[in-house]
Image 1 (spheres, rainbow, N blue to C red):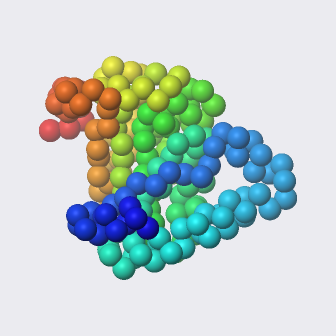
Image 2: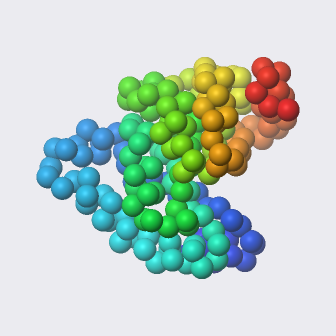
Length: 183
């Protein structure tokens, strides 16, 4: 609620929150009866008041993938709120980590799974081993596939370059332009 107060004071229209799903939960969601439903129930219990506050101030809370192995599960969670104040975010480096380390699908599958529920994207490059936050073009994410998937959307998600070395933000944007993915 404190973060939402800050958002209201500065006029923010989106706030990133992290997914409750982990690689552990992926492998155990069907191990115990009702586990899938419990995560949704606990998330609703935790965020109920925050979602109402977000609705009241015209803000969208976007659920970002962290260790999510299943690209569809967060979309279902966002949909379960039945609120315009809850949508989906993708962090490309997190998705690529999940692809390389846990066997999740590649980044573009996360975009396809989110569809028009996608309203926010953190762009960072990586090698599939760790959350590198490298400049775009320094890792091995298949950017053409990611941007081809993004081009099919009507939701016009915000694309935020989120890298460790902020001095390389212009180089990341130039990289995308150099390979014909941005202007």
